[in-house]
Image (cartoon, rainbow, N blue to C red; front, side):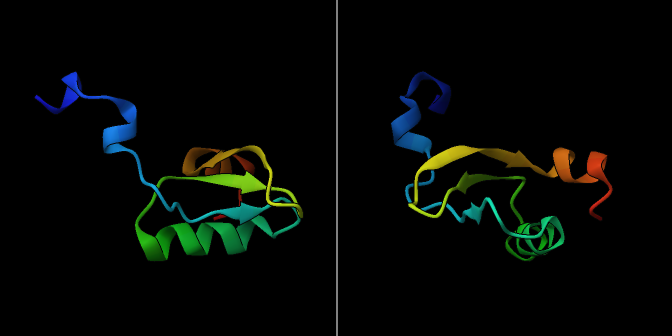
Length: 63
């Protein structure tokens, strides 16, 4: 089955992303519009700084 494949075979190659200075409510809205549960968070240079999950936003009260 697909679980026998590599992560690179099933990953999203062009994920939606958030910018570290972006408002949490804006990130939540984009996640809802696109039906996604998590987003990489990038700094101003486009470097990965972390990942934000829908549960992180809900726990923080952004929704």
